[in-house]
Length: 290
Image: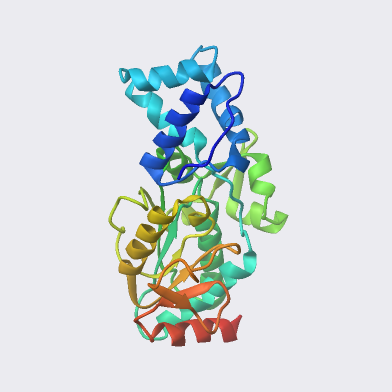
């Protein structure tokens, strides 16, 4: 059930119903009551850019259907793209160790950053593996990064960040080493951006973009309704190579949510396929190394 949201001066109850239904249909995400403030905050810039006087007018434009970009822009604006570099940095370190465990079997690892927003998470991974390559001469794994927002993926591919964004999670040493400042913005070195393959992908509707040893899907499931969440867990399980590990956000868990995954005994916040006991060895090796 979609939670009740209170109308605002610029957004009627009818428009709210359209917006919440559109977001859930396109992405599986729900606008919880505590996120109601996002509607005005997220959509007013779009209202202004289109020369409209209210969110109601914007919703009418979406319903009219002649401007096919309107619905896409509304959904992109309503999505929560909160992210930062090296968010929960110990998790990135543990992913590096889990990849090393995979590589010890003689296989090149594949990593999927699902719900990557504007690209800070996959670039954090790229930095960690690039630094490992400098220290140890080990080639980086394949990294695929996806998001449901075309706008977010376009920004991620560009590798461009504002001063505010670049300072969130990156010490000066890494800023200078891996980014160039031009015109007030910071651009990731080509050596980093080449390490990541970006794709638009809807977790609730699209097949997985391959099979992977490590899947990071952090702070995405929080916003999904229960049926959509169950569907995503099924799709993620199908995307796992033997011994693969799923990484969720600090406030997320598989417990009571799905029977497709179980906690990895070696690493907190990592989960293995419930029918695949080989994930235990990878998780335990990563946990001991961390």
